[in-house]
Image (cartoon, rainbow, N blue to C red; front, side, top):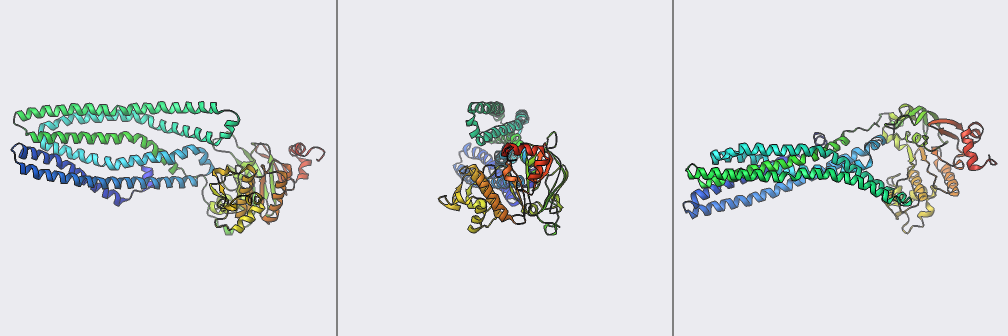
Length: 574
């Protein structure tokens, strides 16, 4: 709780105003039993109707005024909690936006979604309840005890037994419930993760007829969550019965003792009625406070999970080197780079060294899962190497501000991601205020113009979430066009031509060669035909560079490259 309140501040004037309203409401509630006692003692018992009328008008006025005060206090409490939740959600979003790929891997998408939605909503509901009831209850309890002692004398001594019992019962229930709160949130994370996987992989699941298996897997997690939720529910369901028993016994004791004191002349009827109401208010206040405390373990667990996100600092931090002072242009160099993913048993890259110069095309080829994509992820600092250096324009990439570094790089990831909107808004990810002329230029280079012009609304045709209304090849060309809008100094293509036919592949590479000028291109490809004209080809096997050179040189010097070429092109062609 401390962390989230330090990150997102409550507005002081709103809290002070709410406290004043709650205090006035509490005073109003406390005055009513006192006036009722006077009405009975000075009006009903002695048949003074004018006294009854005057006190009745006063009580009605106080009641109406209290209702108005309560209305405004609830409104302010709702506004405070809603604004707090909105600001907290924004803080979490901004923090997640700053995470490197390592932090994203650590938390997981499903967990981050739960923390930024369900967990924040739980904290919001708790804060709203705390502001509306949690502030009022202690005031009423203290005032009730004072007024009860003043009006009830010995009868109020019942509270010295009732309150400790009530507090003890609620404390036991709260401790038991708190043990399951964190477990419940983790199990909800698991359900969200399974649900998200099922939604993203629905085509694969159907293609392999695994609907039943996935349903069983989800059912198992759902039942596990339900069992824990039922346990928490059973603990919560014991609260009201326990409170009702304590209330009932306390009321009976108060009335019994009060009847005895009235009979002996030590107490008036009005005082007994007022005292019984004060005692009821005290017990109700303790009950409300206990209910707030009962909700606290779940809210605390949620707040702790949110704080975990807010307190996590990205492993990728800004440098301070001025971009305009870099000694080179469009140059990428790896110096003895070794890299391992978080929690991996061994490095995925080992002692990688190469240089890409301006105007050159550097291609990377090799077996699946041998570290090709990992090399490219180090260039825009999605991850940092364990050892060695990645130099951009002669300066260690860690020395630049992330914004400056990434402004030099156009990156097309292996999984092409398009955003909900239209074609133009997706292209403008590369250039914020791109014009239609810019769109046409970028689309022409990426060979995307041929399918865009066939769309009913052209560049303003809609794109579904994830680009699901486009084919795989169309998504790839859209992703390449988006990078062409940016016109960076360094182009990084992670297997970005795999969904293209041979003719489109050849045409796109020709367009790139003519369009990029002195920019550097680093690309991963699986087809020899895509990379054979590259200035330098790196052959990667088991995280190491086992071959480096042109196509002709590698045919003679690298057995692995020759084997790939023979499989794809045929021995006769080699």
